[in-house]
Image 1: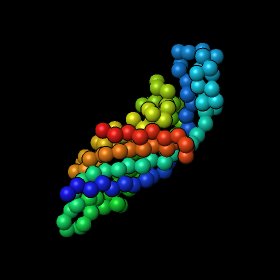
Image 2: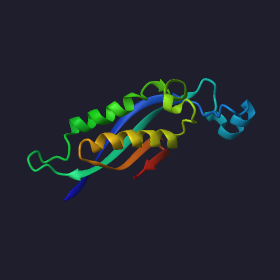
Image 3: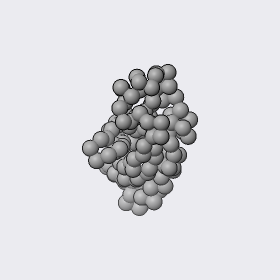
Length: 136
């Protein structure tokens, strides 16, 4: 039998929406208040759902301590950073919620596979009313 298990972690980071080849006015028109030289930050919530089989000895798919460690190690790269200034993956990309979620999905997917699990869904909440959901 396959089961799914969900876990949530939190992290904080800042970003500014900006296409470097565009003028100030073009960026402002397209991105509005998300375009700012000083940027702005969010407290993100990352929800992860993995699927796997229950170990008959432990009764778990994965020890929550291990899943927490795995998820925290993935978000550690972004936590407390200004994405488009400090993180190589975003230096030439607009760090939208969609792109941050895509980046995290790839990282988490690779990490959970080492634990014989499948990533079924990853949801990144930028705010309570803005989120991106990724599935394989």
